Every structure is written in C-alpha cells, then in structure tokens.
Length: 128
Length: 156
Image 1 (cartoon, rainbow over the protein chains, first blue to last red):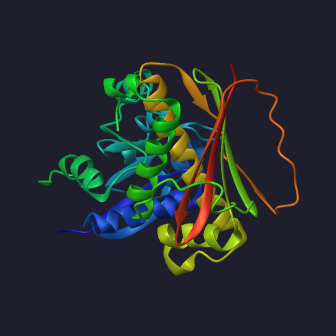
Image 2 (tube, helix red, strand yellow; image 1 turned 120 degrees about the vertical axis):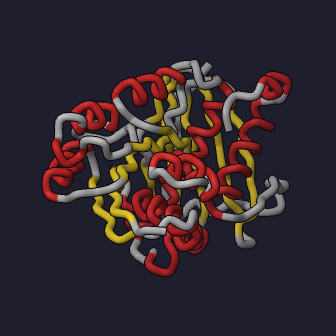
Image 3 (tube, chains in turn green, blue; image 1 turned 180 degrees about the vertical axis):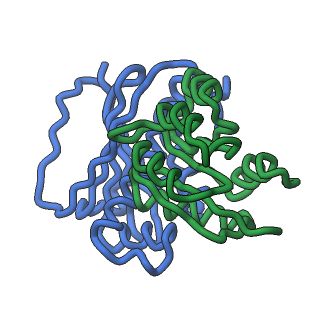
C-alpha cells in the first residue's frame, strides 16, 4: 500500500498525535504529516504542501473546520483532496453542513482504528 | 455511538457510566467499570472540565491524580507524553470525548448542544463551585489501579 501525505487540523496538539497514531494503527502508512492548529493555518499549509488526505476538527479558534472546508475548495493544491471531519460534534446539522461544504466523510470521537480505516480507505480509492 | 432509543429507558447515571466506559475502552484500550466511591477517594491533582450549553446544559469534570493523568497521556501518545502540558491536553481530550459521547446519548444527534473548549486545572488545592442548580451525578472507576472520578453537574 502506498504511503500517503496527510494534513491533520486540530487545535489540540495531543489530538493531532492521536489521529496520527490512529492512522498507523489502521494500517495507513504515512510518508509525511503536516499539522495545523486551525483552519487558517491549514489553508496556509495547503499553499506550501501537497497532501493526499485532510483530517479536520470542527471546533477550533481563528477559523473553524466548516469554514476551512469551504475555503479549501478555492486552493488549487487542495482541489480533489478528500477532507474527513474528525470531531465530537455529532449533530445532524454539523454533519450536513460539513458534507455540504465539501467534506467527504465524518468520524465521530471517540473512534476506533477500524472506523478510521472504514471511512478513510474508500476516499483514498482503497478497499477497507 | 449514535443515538439509540434504548437510552430513553436508562437513567442519566447509567448513560454517564456507559459514555465513560466507551471512551476508556475505545481511546485508552481499557475496560473500566464503576466502583463504590467510598472504597477509593479520587485525588484531584488534575481536573479536566468541559461545559455543555443547550440541551443538556451543565458541566462535566474528570478528576484523577497526576500519575494517572500521565498514564492516560501515555496510553494515547506513547512514551513521548512527558510534559505537564501534554498530560493536561490528553486528559482534556478524554473529558471532551466523554462529554461529546454523553451529549449524543442524552440529547440525540439532532439536538443542539455546544461543548466548550476543555479546561484543565493541575494542583489539588482548590474548591469547585458550580452555580448550576440541578441534578448532579458522579461515577468513579479504576484506571490502572487508581480512581478516576467523572462528575456531571446539570442545570435544571
């Protein structure tokens, strides 16, 4: 399985590490991990890095995850890159807003490596 | 993890216990069960709290001693989790996930309830006063042999 480049967006550095470890536990090998602590940092990171996958929280300071998803669609290097939301916000309205904004999937915390695999492999064009 | 109609027949205390058990099992790989509070008095060297605004409305706190908080961080981050900041963040994230899991079970996924950013207090010399007047419940569990208290204070 090819290694991937991932952008992990979460205001908690611990949560970013947890997500990275979960990818490893799910058998998804990482060539590179770019981290950002809010949507604005993530947009800046996307202008400087090419990634294959974006994992993004919703509730963050400066720019939240929903606004990031909307704005990421205008960044040339982010076009076509799948965005998966990983968040404790599980309300139907958040899911609808995230998917409407362009997110390809939604993982609720707490999550298992199997759930990570189940949601992420299909958007990478791989079988779960 | 999504709303289950069977939760309607359970008490809030049972739902709190279930929400805690799920987070510890999924995120920390540890099966925990509530214990009698009189047997183990939880230490409050680390207290993480998350506010819930909407329905339900209240505050959720997770208290434990410093060694246990470090163990929580190590379970999620490996041996690199050594600074107090990382330990506090890890405990705050666990509290956040318990609050999120709990609100989904109590209110369902179509209800509006916002969670605050987690706050973590380190150092046990403090008194906690919540101005919320309503039901209060607590579950104490053993994690790595040490008690962890999860308390929910609801506003009526």
